Amino acid sequence: MSDSALPRIAVLGAGHVGPVIARVSVEAGYPVTISASGDPERIALITRILVPGAEPRWAADAVADADLVVLAIPLHKFATFDPALVAGKLVVDTMNYWPPTDGVQAMFEDRRYGSSEIVQRRLAQSTIVKSFNHTGYHELEEERRPVGAPDRRALGVAGDDAAAVDLVAEVVERIGYDAVRLSGLSQGRLFEPGGPVFGASLRRDDFERAVSVEAA
Amino acid sequence: MTTTPSSDVQTTAAGSATFPLVLGLDTFGDLTHDKDDHPLSHAQTIRNVVEEGVLADQVGVDFFGIGEHHTDDFPMPAGDVVLGAIAARTTRIRLGSAVTVLSSDDPVRVFQRYSTLNAVSGGRAEVVLGRGSSIDSFPLFGYDLSDYEILFEEKAQLFAELLKGGPVTWQGTIRAPLRDQDVVPHTESGPFPAWIGVGGSPQSVVRAARHGYSLMLAIIGGSPARFAPFSQLFQQALEKFGRAPLPVGVHSPGHVAATDEQAREEFWPRYLEVIRNVSKTRGFAVPTKQSFLREIGPHGALYVGSPETVAQKIAANLATLGANRFDLKYAMGGLPHETLMTNIELYGTQVIPRVRELMA
Image (tube, rainbow over all chains, first blue to last red; front, side):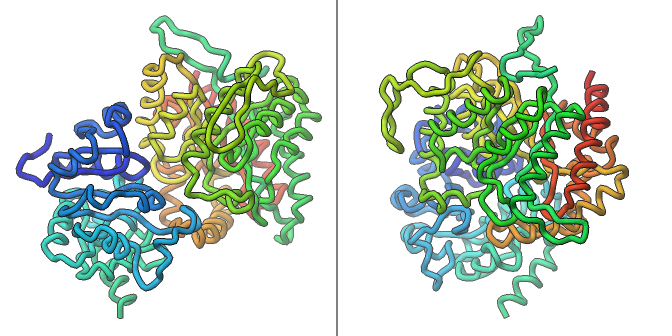
């Protein structure tokens, strides 16, 4: 099913979010791997049933071969995530900092920065792009629409590196959403819990209006 | 007539198991209002839940579950005490948690409380273990949410050992070890049914199978059909761990009234208010009228409508999900007790017989 000309996607995380992103990526034609923290054998059954077409792999092997890494681990596990694992890679940060749900995380308590900026500071050798975090993991699958559909939704893509933002935006578009690019990872704060687009189901023009009103 | 989901198994010729259909009700002890829409006291809300459980028994509901919560709008931290009161006034209905927040409790105490309920009720106790979407018990009892995974994993393992009966030897990192420990009261006839409630994590499904718990799918938003692979994952994981098939249940919110329109009008303002409140702390999206109508339609997670509408939806989704049990989470903060009693009566006298007819 996958198209070998498309970027290879390594999804890290087999909890609520990882398998959903892996599944919609497989269905969009991408070569996809999925990894948890240990032996891929432990997620073989989950992969076969929930993400048919994806390959369960050790995280280090999957990342080494990937063009794009999707970080979909619980935020409270990020403090023990090894930055060397994704050094030199484009990393899509899908996580949220949400103290009432995940507990207070000292690393993310610095309110001068958005959570993805803090992720970028820690993963200094990687290029971080923020996306997918502001939609529910079950909505991500249900609300996909083909290009041009009147009810096609928008997803935000924010990052400092324009080429990386473009690559992630292309994935978002192929999966079934209009990508709204914001330049600057700091703009990704607009996608966070409590922000204007978090949990909202918006078409491109409404999405653009929501983030520009807030940014102004 | 009582049913015991995890023991009363009929094996078909094909070798796959079928379990009896179980149709229950769950509540979180949602704070009820009086007829003038003033909030009742916590104490009165709790006494009302006892009356609701007794009525559920009288009208033929199979199971009555109470979910642990610790907040002003859900004053229900000790559901097992309330279940004990219901047990004393009933003889038939099965009684259990929905859910017990095991991570912030002591598995030995949970076993003792529900084993005691099992004694009081003459063998009608069950327990559903999980996190729920409520996390208030963590700071209350001094637990760190970051430790959720290890707490749940070790406690689920210990609880599975306790259920077997007999002296328990257990060692882990989250509580003192047990060595040949006799834990009382002993059950009269083997383990009582125990479930793990799962939201959206496939690893939790595999964990339930690994420890031999039945699976309760909590579907509170979006399309129920997307959970069908979870059922399949559960049965295949059981097979992989060398275990016999176990039942799968569904827990979803809803409200039954005489007509679709009445059910919608009673439920919608309360639902909006409750979700608006929890969205502040949990990041849920605040529902719109449009999203609400989608949720109560055939592809949504809410069961709101006339008995016929709700019965059709339950029957359709049980078939889709390969599940044999449905627990309707009735009550939504602010609905009056009288409205809830009508809901329970309609569920028992009309929805349940209709679902049985549709699935026969």
